[in-house]
Structure formats: C-alpha cells, structure tokens
Amino acid sequence: MALGKYSFIQNAVMAGMLSSLACGITGTYVVVRRITFISGGIAHAVLGGMGIAYYLGVDPLVGAVVTALLSAILLGLVNLKAKQHEDTVIGALWAVGMAVGIIFMSMTPGYNVDLMSFLFGNILMVTGPALRILLLLDLIILLIVAVFYRQFLLVCFDEEYARLRGLPVDFLYILLLCLIALTVVILIKVVGLILVIALLTLPAAVAGLFTRNLRKMMGWAIVLGLLFTIVGLVISYNLNLPSGAMIIIIAGSSYLCALGIHKLYIFIECHKETGVRP
Image 1 (cartoon, rainbow, N blue to C red):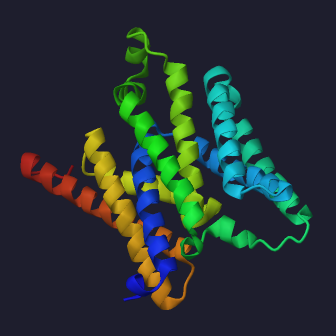
Image 2 (cartoon, rainbow, N blue to C red):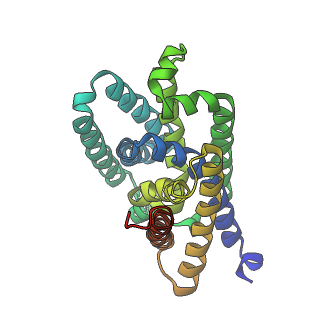
C-alpha cells in the first residue's frame, strides 16, 4: 500500500489526524456559538501574515500564527465593543489581509511559492517540520480546552448566566477566538485558506444533528473530520485530483446526507407521536 511505501502519504495521514483533532474541538464551539463569519475573517486575514513572513524570510506558519491571533483579538474586541460595525470590520480584514499577502508574496525576491497551495491546500506536501508545528498547536488547544472547558460551555450556551456567575466572559470569548485562530493555521496545510471554514464547521455541524451533548459532539466531530480527510485523500490520490477540494466535497456531501436523514427521522418520530404531518 502507498501508506507503507511513501513518507509523504504518512505525513498526509498524520496531518489529517492532527487537523481533525483541532477542528473537531474548536469547530464545535464555532457551530454552537454561531461565529462562522468571524472565523472566516480570521482565516482570510492570515494570508497577509504569511506574505509578510515570506518577504522577511521567516517560516510562513509563524507569520500565520501571529496574524491569526492578532486578527482574533481584534475581531473579538470589535464584537464586544462595537457590534454594530462587526460585519464591516470583518469584511475589511478579510479583503485587506488577502491583498497584503498577495502583494508581499509578489515582492519576495526569487519568489517561487505556489500561491494556490495556500489558497486551496495540499496535504500531500506537508513536511516533518510542519507536522511538529501542527502537533504543538494541537497540544496548546487541548491544554486550553481542558482548563477552560466548563467556562467555555457557559459562555457558548448561556452568556448572561456566565456573567452572573462572575466569569470573565469577554476574556473567555477572545480566548475562544484565539483557539479558532490556531485551528485555522492547522487547517491551512490541509485544505487551504479558501476552504478552511468548511472543514472547521462541517464535521461539527454533522455531529450536532444527532447529539446536543458538547463532549459527544466534539468526539464525533473529531472522528468525522478524520474520516472526511482520509476518504478525500484516498480519492484525490487515486484520481489525481486536488486533495483539499476533494476533502470538502466529501464533507459537504456527508452533511447534506446527514441533514436529510435527520429531517426524515424527525418526520417519522412526529408522525408516530401525533399521527399527523409535523
């Protein structure tokens, strides 16, 4: 099998496992809190940091981490302090971040970076050093969630009660956005900037159709994210198709199927209880 023969396939599988762990945990918070648009703003602003890092001769993942965290803090503050301007600021950060990234990449001496791999991802190009960075980011995410799990739970489901309990809701919200920012950086190597929000939210969205328990939702989202990634990787490898796009097609198709099954289940249960159309 190719998995045993080629190291780049092994790296791709490892990257899939690490990304599934991150997106399963933080993607659940994104879906429950309904902050997909903010997550999209963070994701697309990252290209600016990557472009600047390339121009300065620094590892682009370092630039991505710094920019993602700064964007998360900025958008968190805007959401908390000036909510009426939130959409405008997110749109501006989204567009300006990508524009800055493209400009700095074009200015880089001897520029030979495949921009498409950052926009649409290429999990087959993940290297050993990149895997170590992804592992470190995963460990940071796991540590923070382990420490603040109950606080995040209250902030996501009942913010007013969390404030009454005296929790630092604003700090927890911005910290949650920082977790999303780190996850975005991880997913860039798998599906790219354009498709990162789909992989961040779809596994959790599928899991959320069948359970309301946050822990179970995270667990199922991790499993589904890994399944989508592996199946997409296998199909893309055998058919010589873009891996990131194929992963998202698998994830999107699975969500539509799961949504149909969920609606059918509700219809049947309501019909059993009432004998009439729900």
